[in-house]
Amino acid sequence: MADRVLANQDFADDASAEKGDAPQFGVYIHWPFCLSKCPYCDFNSHVRRAEIDESRFVRAFAAEIAATAARMPGRTVSTIFFGGGTPSLMQPATVGAILEAIARHWRVAPDAEVTLEANPTSVEAARFRGYRSAGVNRVSLGVQALDDRVLKELGRLHSAREAIDAVHIARSVFERYSFDLIYARPQQTPQEWAGELKEALSEASEHLSLYQLTIEADTPFAALHAAGKLKVPDDDDARALYDTTQEICAAHGLPAYEISNHARPGAECRHNLVYWRMHEYAGIGPGAHGRLDIDHERHATATEKRPEAWLTRVENQGHGLITDEVLTREETADEFLLMGLRLAEGIDPQRYAALAGRALDAARIAALRDNGLVEMTSSGRLRVSMPGFPVLDAVVADLAA
Ligand SMILES: C[S@@+](CC[C@H](N)C(=O)[O-])C[C@H]1O[C@@H](n2cnc3c(N)ncnc32)[C@H](O)[C@@H]1O
Ligand code: SF4
Image (cartoon, rainbow, N blue to C red; front, side, top):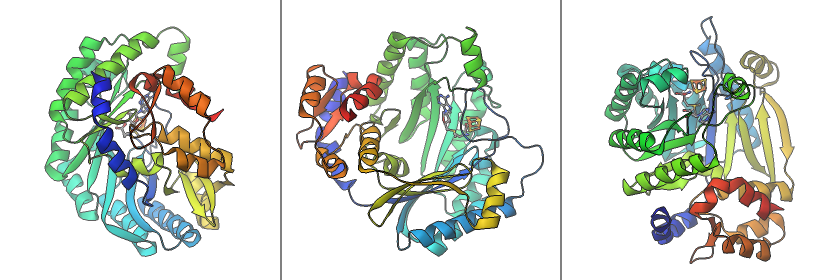
């Protein structure tokens, strides 16, 4: 059934995919602090006992925005994303000052999407209204699960009730909101997940992010996993959970537009599409990554990860960059495949050929098609099929070889 749902999207996907070729420019702002560290998470997030000097951070964010804009002037910002860590720990005035700094150096499109990630533990209506007044127009909440026992196991500081209350606050303040859930958790059955997902869908509006639990190296979950104390579903069970996800979301009008992201058509997260469609984005703040197109070269940038070391670098040299590499044609084309094939709309093989300087291997595509892992759309786009998504990495590796 899920195959059929995706196939029926063919026309709409192609139309929106073509629109996606118009240049977009995103600005990513990283806020690197959390109230506590979740045992599964390897994001660049840190817990501090002492109060954070937000005005010092604002000055550093503004300086790094100015330095980045000097390298890439004249852009129009189409999306801004405050990610973390936990950006909802920032004062609304801090968010407002960063948005003002962006608008001082670049033109911001009148319809720019401005998203802020929030943890249910730090959600209050007044704070959300403050973000809205500052210019935020979309929030993404880390709900993770709707079961108190599971939330405890995940090390979360909020209950399911508090998470739902946070969703209700988000809904009352913002026209656009999304929330995240983690599935394929230890011992989770498709039946249990189906119930939880349906409950989530009854609280969702236009967008949901549904991530399979990943055991990240050097986390407490990785240690438990290595010791045999935490068992994640095997490939077959994970596949069954994945299929359940696709079917239920599609039936509720939120099909997958990316391997872990579901939206009502037209309500996709435009910022994340900037990454997946290989547009340009600036990464600002500790441990942020960027892709800048300067003089026909694609630069991959990364900043110092440690918050205090990043502050010192910015204060001394005006930016926190520690990596600024020009990608080769091959690297750029591989990244295009890796990112674009995550999307239900797939990629334009001609854009690949222009980037790589050679076409994709027709025999490899044919073999993957024969195995039902990829398909060509009516307008000639190449995309991964439903059975191909659970083995996406292998499909990409095969095509890029
Ligand atoms: C930066 S966090 C979101 C906002 C906020 N920090 C929070 O946790 O509420 C981004 C999302 O990544 C997902 N995530 C983080 N680590 C993960 C893991 N190991 N496996 C699957 N999903 C993960 C979670 O769903 C999380 O909400
Ligand atoms: S999942 Fe979110 S709240 Fe938990 S440590 Fe990671 S970034 Fe922080």
